[in-house]
Image (cartoon, rainbow, N blue to C red; front, side, top):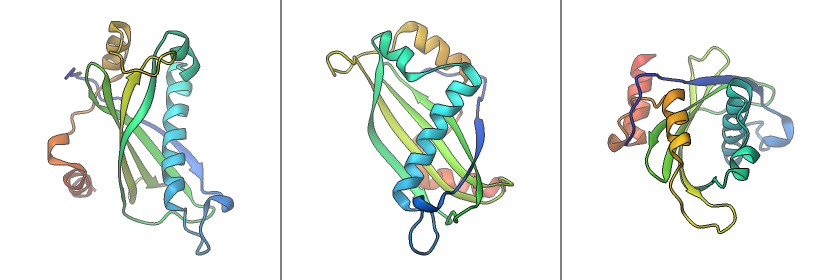
Length: 163
């Protein structure tokens, strides 16, 4: 595992839209994933001018291997939410990104998502190692110090104890 002294947690704000809600005006559970993954893509583009198609041209793409998500509080129609993202684990061909959704004031944690990605060659679809340049970039952007071995439930407890 690669480590970094930098903790680059990126944030952006979104409005919960009506078509994304269930009949009770709660953000639909499956849409949490969409909002968080879209936020991560926005974070990379807006903060570092990094775009997925550029990586594909370099022979590197990522597929989702696993999602771990906990829904803690509802997000409501027309509510402004803050979504943060950061890398919490980086290995030769895998990485894990933590995404958290808060209320607008960032005091009420609504959901946390750990997405496990595997690097693949877009031409073959087969697993491949990250390039040394990507490892250096990801390390420079920061890898958060999160105790993944303790699991996502313990992470939620740790985050709540900070509030």
